Image (cartoon, rainbow, N blue to C red; front, side, top):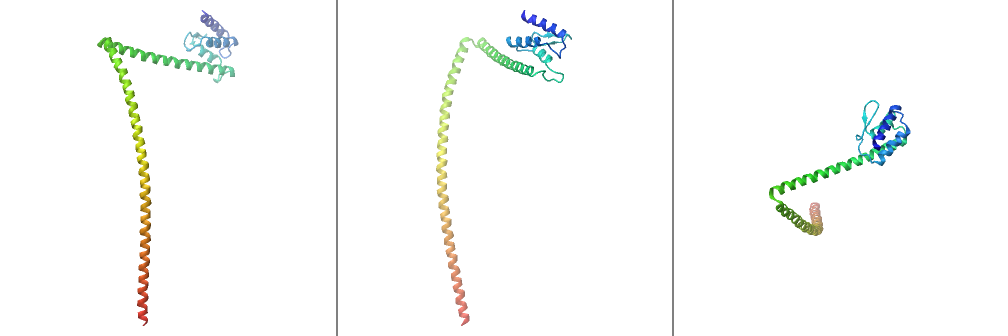
Length: 209
């Protein structure tokens, strides 16, 4: 009854005032009604304009509180529009989730009915019990597998650290061996150079005689 009375008042008010200049009490009626009734859809209980077009209350509020360029008439109107749109989006999301939940429940219920009709209620109970037991067992097996993988990773890490340490020792040993051979080669070259120089001096002295 209250909704119909508001609809008649709104229709009467729109017949007397232009759409671009709404009366103040119409704004309060629309906002208070949508706030107190948690209005969730703009197409329910539509209001008919003088042109014969039917619009929802949120759409009507939006139409009657915007300028020709599309901006809100006042900052307060803009805030109200933003709040109403947020509430609308919130309720639509809730409705969508509820619809999805209902669909899942219906699908599960239909599957249960088909299985029960085919195999009997006792078979369904046995399958459900076996399912829970398998999940429980799989959970324990999975935990053991994870722990085993952790142990293997720790062992691999320890082996890697040991291999790196061994490689460092081998690298140091190779470096020392290379340095030793380099020094031996330098010493040998010096000896050979000294021997050649001595031989040349000897030949030179013999030629002088």
